[in-house]
Image 1 (cartoon, rainbow, N blue to C red):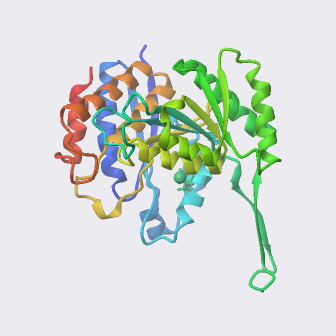
Image 2 (image 1 turned 45 degrees about the vertical axis):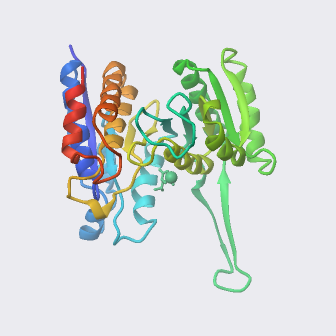
Length: 353
Ligand code: IPM
Ligand code: MN
């Protein structure tokens, strides 16, 4: 019997629905070629719903999302909603409630995609960042003292648990081994200044490393990593880091791989339901014009299939994206692709084999 997956779709705001529409088009085509089926249930979440009803993520919806095989997300964000509102009550809440403890961000420069790095090509930029996704500064621990007075104090704490650090690092060692590229795992931290948190991270890292003698380990401070991403991206294979550093270095990673039009990511619970998204925002000014680049959303779909175990189908999507990039597309920017959003989706679907 062929496999069947229930996919919760959160198309979201702005250009999210257009991107997801093309992603679903490609996913359906690849599913029929590879003999599995995808059943979608759509959820209306995001800024538009919040402005209409005041609701962000109702408990009933959260309960249903927990039962899906995966979540496919377009974009959450609305110019009329104060910053922080939707991030906290939808995106971050999903990460905590579904325990999506790995943020997976492939940083891969595809052929024919322009990178701002001089003299670097696809053979130089191909690594994966695994960011801890449920702890650190993101837990919201802290508070004010004497708020509003001249003696005001604001405290924001980074929480690092042995369990949280260990499970992310174990996943990172497994990914490094399975990827089988250079089998090198780099820990990205700040051991020279943040001596409590990063002592825990590096001690745990060394301990787990003993169980993976085939994986080479390395360490770099986060500030140095920012330099190397630009100067020597070819040094990296897999990078593991905490939530805040990961947030920062993955945006830098997105830029060296060609920008938000191509960058996809996964919020993963290896034992549960995971969520996949293009990392660019809702791009409100392009909404409804059929000009936004859907490739990041399509690649997020490929990532979803990979994590669901449909690796051949995931590879097929990636190859089709590469063909589309090399044979057709003129650029990645909205309105400058030489094709509409739906035409790009058609091209990718057409190349599948
Ligand atoms: C990301 C985003 C989020 C984060 C925001 C939207 C809360 O920037 O997924 O990297 O900071 O993690
Ligand atoms: Mn970010």
